[in-house]
Image (cartoon, rainbow, N blue to C red; front, side, top):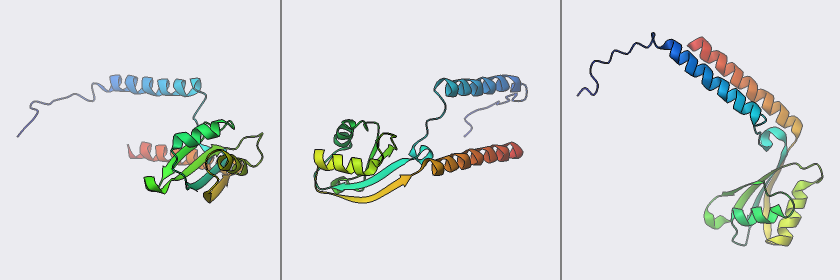
Length: 153
């Protein structure tokens, strides 16, 4: 069964249109990046704290976010992990300059505001130096992959 017949498309003849379209798309992407202040890096690249906490009380990510908003951490990334009955979350937030030990501050606040009976499974602090090295490595990996694509093409 032949779906299309007489498919003679002059791709080489249309290459100038493709160049213009590709150039415009790249230009618009660069302008958008500049207007929005560059890429938005997560705590892996900028530094911060990741806490893995298991609560006894049944909570939702919204409950935790509302609680953390009281200490100006409402923009923290909160993910539920495991089964829904496990009630375990990962809370990731950037390191704030006015709070020296953000992990302890979050733990104290959650204990007082939501559930005093919880278990801290893991606390990971990512310094900005490690984040800077990771950012440089990621940019280098993208650059090398682009060169590889150009060689392949």
